[in-house]
Amino acid sequence: MCGIVGVVSHQPVNQMLYDALLLLQHRGQDAAGIATNQSNTFSMHKANGLVRDVFRTRNMRSLNGNSGIGHCRYPTAGSSSEEEAQPFYVNAPFGITLAHNGNLTNWEQLKDEMFKNDRRHINTDSDSEVLLNVLAHEIQKASTDVHLTPANIFQAVTVLIKRVRGGYAAVAQIAGSGMLAFRDPNGIRPLCLGENETADGKEYMIASESVALEGMGFRFVRDVLPGEAIFIDNDNNLHAQICAAAPKLNPCVFEYVYLARPDSVIDGASVYNTRLKMGEYLADKIKREGLAEGVDVVMPIPDSSRPAAIQLAMRLGVDYREGFIKNRYIGRTFIMPGQAMRKKSVRQKLNAIGDEFKDKVVLLVDDSIVRGTTSREIVQMAREAGAKKVIFASAAPPVLYPNVYGIDMPTRDELIAHGRTVQQICEEITADALVYQDLEDLKKSIADVNPALTEFEASCFDGKYITGDVSAEYLDRIEQARHNPKKAKVAEDAARTQLNLNTATTES
Image (tube, rainbow, N blue to C red; front, side):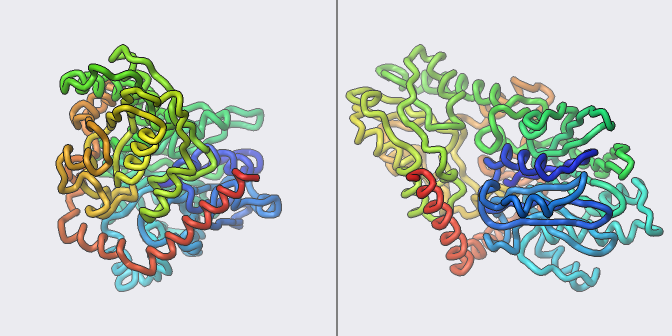
């Protein structure tokens, strides 16, 4: 999960890119970067940290040009090193910058092919650098002279889609030619197009979520289709073509559950409305299991579970209360590496209002349960605040399998639901009762909002990997890489530094 944005304008884009990244900050807190283009010269600044911390006035002044791309990262492949912050740049052919959201499942094979066959050197362990070099190589093969045509671009993306496996959405800028955006043939990771009419002509923005477009005053035009490439040339002409042989829309269900902002619309479905529906279906299951009787109050675990909790309470006819207050200066605990770091940050992130819990049967609603660390701490906090009984409800089904398409939960032993029954999980998080959403109901929650969505990428719930190349051996391999002590230490240190910085900011 990362946030990407590209802007083609008639005025300097550095501030627009910065502001758009702030709107996408929820998609990645590890690093941020911007690359702009002026007169075929790229300017770039990137570093580890939040968007607000990476860019200073001197950095912004150096980012010249009327077009550019931006990225906020949370790492799913490679490491947390600053060298792997995006955008990436390659100087041949033409000069290309690229920002990528997602994860390539065959990046190691591609990296090997790049070196042996294509004579390209990949300097990091980032699959995004691999994706950039595959694109650059195919553009070089497709181009006939120094002037690229849209046909050359689309031919290159067509071959790229044949070579690359996984979930990905990308924006790239090609010196002397224009801006390119493309999405994987299954439409796993989101990408959308916006435009803005100005006195000087039309401007374009491409971003991971519609909230970035609307927040910057752009009109949402449409989602980029699965397997589609969009090219905006230097004369501001927009060209689009489906470059995949058999594209099929399978959006990631976890975008709707947790990743996306509620005010975004992804593939025609309002994230907020899908979460309301999740609450309705979850309420019905709670009734069927006989757990609704005696509940005094329904409370969300802020923030992404709030719509589901509101609708659930209404459906059950039970009071809704905000029992936990969130410190918004602490990062998302799902993203933070290390159990100890997550446990510490939960207590700093949430504080219970004792009067709302005292002597009550409390139904807590969260968007999902991944590792269980946060859930366990929250249940304990509710008990310490005086709750008589704690029922825990998840708006998502049990997370049973690793996600390999851009969400950082790649090891089975980190998933509390893997190999455990619901009762065992309930005991592990110390709740009195536990209810999970059914997978079919989760899918209905999205399809009810947009009936055109009939199939989804839900591998973390059902273990079905739609790219067809994820085996048990593959999962074993990425888990071994995950447990690399050196990489784990780098990630832990980065998270600790950010947590201490956020705490200092809060205290000041």
